[in-house]
Figure 1 (cartoon, rainbow, N blue to C red):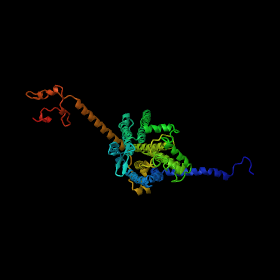
Figure 2: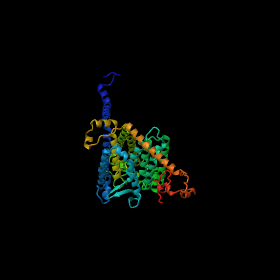
Figure 3: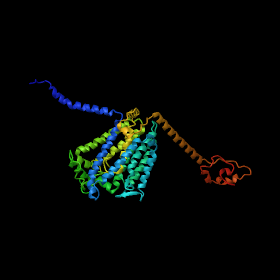
Figure 4: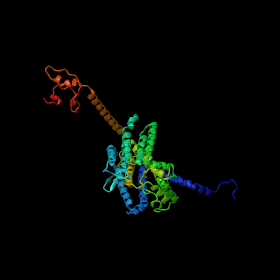
Length: 504
C-alpha cells in the first residue's frame, strides 16, 4: 500500500499531461504552418473551395424535390448553380492575375457601368420583373443581378478613392465626398427595385469603407445611427416588410402566415439534432420550408448534417474572418488594406445576417448565405471578391519576397500566376502628390475661368473716326453679348471687328 501523502504514480501523471502536450504539439504545427509566406493565400483558396463545394451539394439536396415536383429535372437548379460556379472560378482566376495598377485605374469606370446597369434594370422592357421586383437583366437564358455586381465595384472604387486621398491632413470632405453621395445613390436605386436586403449589404459596405478609411468615431456613430433609422423606416414602409418585422416581435402569432417560414426553419434545425438526419434526408425540403435552397439553406444544413454541419460552416466563416483581417494587417499597400478589410466585413456580415434570421435572432431579410445559397450572380460575384482577396494575400511583403525568390509553390506554378508587384511607399506618395497637384491645378484653372467670365469687359477709348462706339452701344445699355461666352473667343481687347470673328 502506498503511504498517505505520496505523489500519484508516474503513469497517471503522464495520462493527465498527454492531452495538453498533444494540444501544444498541434498548436506548434499550426503556428509553423501559418508562419509560411503564402499561408494566407492558401487559406483563402481552401475556404472558397470548401464553401462552394458544400453549397453545390446542399443546393442539389434542397432543390431536387421542388424542381421535380414542378415538372422539371431534379438537377436543373443544380446544373445552373454549377455553371455559375465554373464562371465564378474563371472570375477568381482573372482576379488573381489582374495587376493592382490596372485594377485601380479601371475602378471608377467599372463602378459607373454598374450604376448604369442599376438604372437600366428599372427601365421597362430592359429589366426583368419577377414577383413585383425588377432586379434582373436577361442575356438570353442567363440572368444577371446588377445589385450583386455593384457590391464589388463599390468596394474596389471606394478603397482606391480613400487610399489615394490618404494623408495625415486629410479633411473630412475628402473622406465623405464623393464616396457617400455615390453610395447613397446606389442604395436609392436598389430600394426602388425594391430590394431592402441588398440595400442593407451595400450600407454595410459603405460603413466599413468609412470606418477603415479613418472617419472620426463621433461622425461614424452618427452615420450608423442614421442608417439604422433609415433601414427601420424602409422596413416599415412596405406591407410585406412591416409584416416580417411584426412577426419577428410576435413569433407566436400567425404561425400559418407571416411566421410560417421562420417557424419551419426552427423545426428543421431541431429535427437535425447533433448528428443530423443524413445527407438528402431532410423533411422540410418536401414543400414544408419555402426557399429552402436559397434564403434558408442553413436550416437544411442543420437538419441533414446536424449541429456539426452548422458548426463546420461557422468555423469556415470564422477562419475566413481571421484570414481577411490577417491579410489586411500584413499588407503594406493602403489600397489592399481597405479592400480586404471591407470585403471581409461585407461577406462575414451578410453571412451572420442570414444565419441570424434562420435561427430566429433577426427578422427575415432575404440576404443569401455567401457561396452556399442558390443564386448564380451572388455565387460568381462572391468568388470574384475571394479572388481579389487572394490577390491581396499574394501581395503581403513576405509573400512578395518569397515569390520573387522563386518559392512559388506547386499551386502557383500550376496556375502560372505572375509575380506580384513590390509596393513602394515613396512611389505611392509621389503619385498621390502628382494627383493632388493636378487636382489643385484644375481647381485653380476653373477659378480663373470663373473670374474671367464674371469680370466686366475692359473699357477702351473710341478711336477718332471709328464706329467702335456705335458697336459697343448695346453693352453700355447693360446688355452683354452672347459671343463673349464662347470658349474660343480671345480674352484680351481686339480693336478690329474681323479679329473678333465678325465679317465686314
